[in-house]
Image (cartoon, rainbow over all chains, first blue to last red; front, side, top):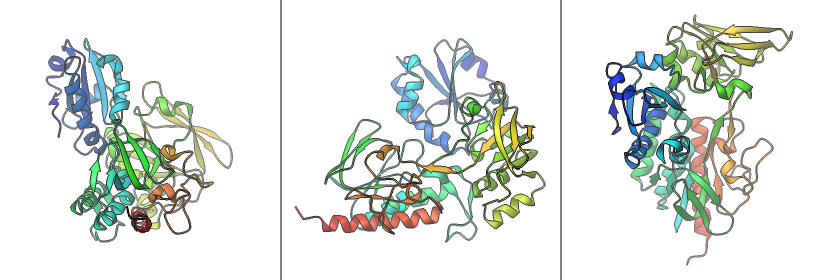
Length: 108
Length: 309
C-alpha cells in the first residue's frame, strides 16, 4: 500500500532518531481509513523531495511503545524528526497541497 | 468537454455515477484526495443499508459502489475541487493539482463536515484527545475513560464502538431527549461500560499536552463540574459542505444547497445537487443514494434537452 519502509519499536533509534536528514514518520494502522487515504500522498511527497526528507511508516498496533512515547492519540499522525527531536507534527489526512504547505520549511 | 462531472464520492456521488454511467454519460467523479468514499469510510458496521442482512462495513460498501460505477464507465479522480465556475452552458472546475475540467453539467454531492463544539481549546487539543472519529482513534484509549458528546445515532455508535477499548464511556447530551434510533439507543443503554450524562453541555476541554478532562454545565441547574476523561469524541452532527459553491448556488436558511421541490435542480441550469449537502433532516446512506439517483436522472434529462451540436 505504501512505498515507505517500515520502522519499528526496535529500530526506531537507529532508523529515525539517528537520521541525519529530516525524517517523517507516518503513524498508521491497517484499520484506519484516513491512513490509507494519505499514504499515497506521502509517497508522492517522499519521491518528489527525496533529497530533502525521508519518509517512513510505523504501525501503531505492532509498535505501541513508540506510539505511546510520542503521545500519538489520533492517526494518521505525521511527525518530522531532526537530530532525534520532533520538530513538526501534522495530524490527520490532508490533501497534498495542504500537507505540502504544512511541511514547506522541510521541502524547500 | 465532458457531459457530466460529479463532485463527491459518498453514496450520493457514486449512485449518481452508476446511473449516469449506465446512461452513457461517462461521468467524471472527483472523489476527493483524502476523504474519498465520504463519511461511511469512518464507520464500521452498517446495519441499515438494504440488501445486506448481515450488515456491511462502511468502507467495504463504498468500495462496492465505486466498483459498480466504474463497471459502467465512470472515471474517478482522487483529487479535490479547488474552485468552480457554474454559471452558463459550460461549467468549469479547477482541481487541487491545477488541472481544469469543463462539463455541460455538474452534480454537487459534497456531503457534510463534522460540527465542532466551538470551544477555545478544542482545536488545540484536536488529535491530542479531542477526536471526531472513534473508529480512527478509539484504539488509543485502551483501559481509559472517555466521553462522547451528542445524542444522535453517530454518538451512540461511537460510544458503543469505544467500549471495545475504553473501561468507561460517558455519553454527554444537552437534553433528556436522545434522538438516536431506538435500537442504537437501547444498545448503548444496556452496555455496562456506558453511562449517560443528560442535560449537560461541555463548556471546557482541559489538558496541557493531552486531554485530561472536560468541564460540564448542567443545563437545568447551571451547576458546573469537572469530569476526568482522557478522550473527548465529538458527535454533534454535521454541516453541509458548501464552501466551494458559495456565492454561486442559492442556499437555504439551514445552509443546505437549495433545490427545486423534490428534484435536484439548483438555481443554475445544468447544476444539480444531491445527498447530505441538500438534506437538513435525514442524512442516511440510503437517502443520499436515492438523492444521487434523482440528480443523475435530472442531469440526463437536462443534457437530452440541450440543442444537439
